[in-house]
Image (tube, rainbow, N blue to C red; front, side):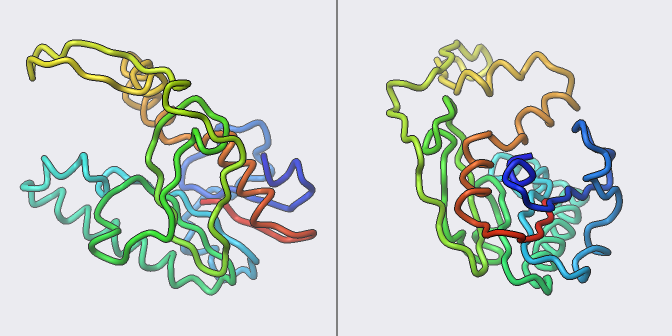
Amino acid sequence: MALRSRGHEAHSCDILPTTGKHPEWHIQGDVLNQLDKGWDMMIAFPPCTYLTVSGNAWMNDPERQKERRKALAFIRKLMKAPIDKIAIENPIGVISTAIRKPDQIIQPYFFGDNAKKSTCLWLKNLPLLEPTDMLDDDQLEYKHWYDKKKKRWRRQPLWYYQARDLSDEERRRVRSKTFQGIADAMADQWTTKNIYSIAV
């Protein structure tokens, strides 16, 4: 939406149907079958289920180890895509050690959103994103709560905490959503007129 609002022909691609209001802008299918279609830029948001640091606690499971290897193989294919400009977004996780360190780590509050979420960017032929509306930590909203299992007080960003009462599917969707300020910064700082983009 951020790219389209600036006049660019942008499409999303996912094996799932779109949740947006414009299904005509969505390619439903395997993105690996779309990489050689002549795109100028790809902004990829691959699933992080088996890639995040928070998932390490379950990595003794051979099945999860297999899924992690598949997820890393998918990342490598995205990085090698025949597309001039590439950005791959993911939380802090194993991509940094298994493939390479990110070019940049950003936060939603760098771009005016009242949220904290460390977000890594691996870039090809794209500049680092410049903060547009930096908020101070004391401006951010947190939820303080007592963790009975660990017997200690915890603090989580309010937006993240509030998602815990949602269904598993809805919680995944909310927590993986790109914040508007980041989307606007990508659209403004990474494009020129008539660029064609695909977001995964």
